[in-house]
Amino acid sequence: MRGYGQYCGLARSLEVVGDRWNLLIVRQLLIAPARYRDLIDGLPGIATNLLADRLRDLEAAGVVERRTAATGSVVEYALTPWGAELRQPIESLMRWSTPLMIRGPEGDAFRLEWLSLAVPALLGARVKVRASVTVGLEVGDAPFQLRATRSGFEVGPHDGRDLDATVRADPACVLGLAAGALGLDDALTLGLVEIDGDESVVRTVFSA
Image (tube, rainbow, N blue to C red; front, side, top):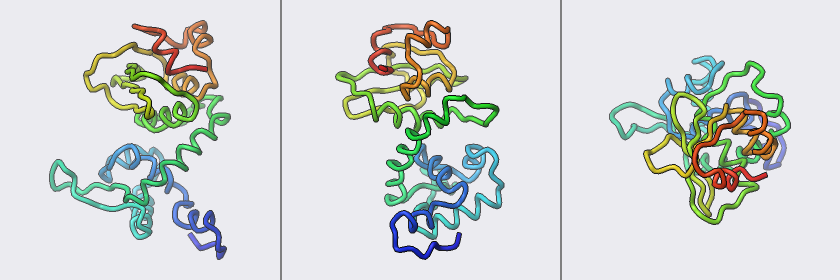
């Protein structure tokens, strides 16, 4: 994009990440380094040539780097340390988006992996836990886990550890609970959530 010609941090930041798709590429790479094909899969709607252009621009700006994956000779994309500093503003935008998310997907594409960034961002701003707990999240074909500690929250594939409780719900419901836009009691009454295990642990994590 053309520069704004303004000596302002926001203007100069937008010159780097303000183009369409740039911050969503960063979102994917905050979840994990990814191959080109993985990025295509994780960014439904992007054209392959546009992704190539955006990656090239982000790499030139010092936000993204190419490297050899640990599993072999395959090239993957990852954020540079400077690029990874975009986590905080992206998490802030996710929290700011809560009123926009209440109406539900409305046919928009969704990937379960996006929960791994959104749920910790939403919970971390308003919930503090006193003891470490692990809650299973059954929101799709693959089981996830939500790990809550005094230092924050992490969401990822279930790693086999014992679960204190398990929550079954659709992704929109989990996002609503994490944002505090949906109360757990209301979700249970409406049949939007099922809980196995220690319900008090779930209440500790998804407190209103």
